[in-house]
Length: 289
Image (cartoon, rainbow, N blue to C red):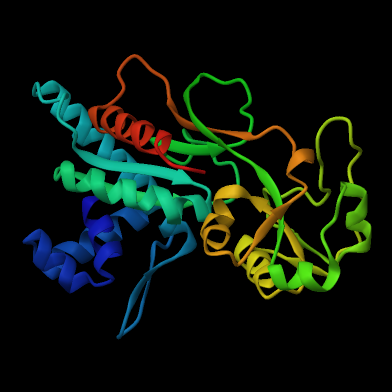
C-alpha cells in the first residue's frame, strides 16, 4: 500500500522506487500483486505517464487512511500517541475552505511537522467515516448523529447588488419587490433555489434572468452591476468591504446559519485530530463572518 501511494504521488514507478529505496522491478511487482489481489486495474501506464484509474483512485484514498491508522496505532503502542502525527484529512465547503480553512491548515502543519494534511473541499455533505475524514467544517443545521460538533460561529444569507445596479433600478424595499428586479440564482448543490426570508414572509417566487452553478459565478455577475444575487455573508465579505457590493433587505433575513467543527466521536480521539480541532475552533471563532 505504501508503494501504491508513493507511485500515485510521484506518477512514476522509477521515482517511487528511488524515494522508497527500492528497485524498479520490486515496485512493479508490488503493484502487480495489489492488482491481482484486488482484481482491479489500479494504474494506466504509458511511455510518458502513470495515472490512477477510477478504481485505483478510490483504493489509494483507502490506502492512505489505512496507513494513517496503522501509524497511529503504532505510535499509541509505542507511547507517543500524544504526539500529533500521520495523515490528517479535513473537509469544508469550497469557498469557505479556500478563504479560511487552507490558511488554518498550513499554520497547523507548520506547528506539527510530523503531520501531513489533506484538504477536501466540497459543496455537499460527505460521510466522515466512509470517506476517511478526520474533521469537517459544516455550515447549516446538523442532523443528530454520534459525531462531536462544536459551534464556532454563524453566517447570514444576504441579498446584494452593485451600486451601479441600484443606481439604475433602485433598491427593493421588501422581499416581494424582488419580482420586479433582475435576479441571479445559484444552482449549486447547497444553495436553495427559492429565496426564503424571516418566518412571517412567504418564499419569494423569482423569475431569474441567470442561473449559475457556482457561487463565484453568481457573485461575479452581481459585481458587474447586472443583477441581484443571494449568497452567504462570508462569500461576499471582500466585495462588501471594497464597496463593490451592498446588502439590501437586511431586516427580512432568515436566522443565521451555524458553523460547526465536526469530528467522529470515540473513546480515543487521535492527537492530530484533537490538536487540529483546538486550533480550528480558536481561529474560526475570531473570524468576522
